[in-house]
Length: 288
Image 1 (cartoon, helix red, strand yellow):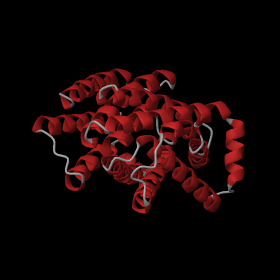
Image 2 (image 1 turned 30 degrees about the vertical axis):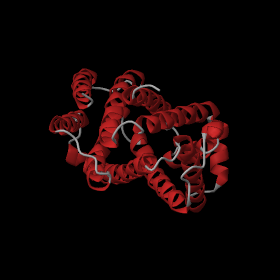
Image 3 (image 1 turned 135 degrees about the horizontal axis):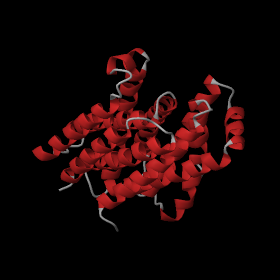
Image 4 (image 1 turned 90 degrees about the vertical axis):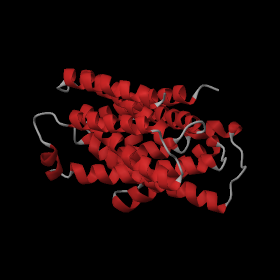
């Protein structure tokens, strides 16, 4: 099998593809309905991995933990979709995906027993600082964004995302088959979204309408999402989540910021390229 960092980089590429497709679709659609549609289709696509799945180490406690990870993941995904919809992708991507790393490192330290070297902690600090600088675009300050509700949603998605990924790593640490985990967790995420859309909007009719209107966007985004998740689960088998997540995030951010700036004609491209180079260097140091 490939080294974990190659798997993490591949996961980042598929994450970027899914995010760019999602941003394109969300230009005209409601974030919640799109996310729900993606999650429902995402409960079906992973079934192709059934031949690789086993039920070893699956019990009631494990299933409950898997559900909790899917619940927090679903919640984070809904909030992140709203953030992508209401801001430009080259600004929202760094902030939405880097801030959870702070909470992941903290949670992994106290609950998973993961301890990093001093230079690795320093690399994470550099990544966070570069993200903060990328967040400021000269048009709206950080506090200006706070007034729009961006900051509360950002913190919300960051904490819930960090909890979800810590639970993912815990499940993999107790030797649950990653393909089994993918299938069960995606099924739970699909159920979560169906329940939410039923309570909040007009039920499955909204999902059917969305799938009928954007079949290729939803299918391609779902496939990219499923591939990134299984690749990253495999990467986590050989690495601490507090190292693997910042690496995946930084590569993903560089790809999304550069491509997003080009495809969606967003500003401050030169500044974001320079910050992206700094993030790449910090990511390299992180995995030494």
